[in-house]
Image (cartoon, rainbow, N blue to C red; front, top):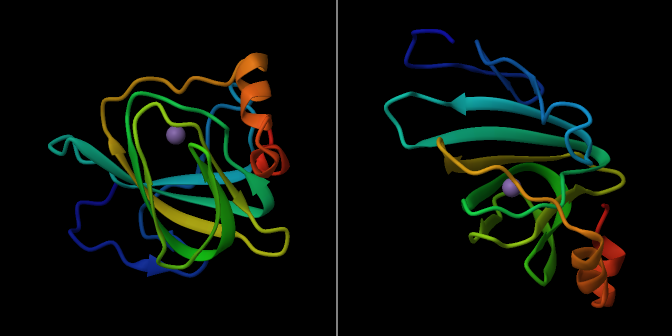
Length: 149
Ligand code: MN
C-alpha cells in the first residue's frame, strides 16, 4: 500500500494502490461474482473499511457471526437480507448488521452493487447455515424467495 495520505479514486470503483482481491478463498463458502478491496486497513485502527462489488446477478455468502457490520452503498442497486428483513437497497442507503444476525447481499439482475463495509480488524469467522437453519429461514416466503445458499 502507498505511503501517500491521499489515494485517488480511479475509474471503475478502484483506488490508487489498492489491490483487487477475491471476496473469499474460492470453495470456502458459497458466493457468486464478488470482488473485495481493503481501503483502510491500518494496524493502529480497530476497524477496517472494505469495498465490495457484486456483479449483476451475483450474491454474497449467507452467513452470521459475532462481529457486526456497518454498510454504506456506494453504487448500483440490489437487495439484502438482515435477520428476517429483506429490503431493496441503493446508493447511500445504510445497512446495519448486528452480531449473530443472518445476512446476505444480492446485486439486481441488471445492476452491479458496490458497498463500503466497516468491520472489526480482529473478528470471528463467519458461520454458514445448516440445513435446519435454512429450513427455518425458508419458512418465511420472502426469505425463501431471496436466499441463495
Ligand atoms: Mn458478514
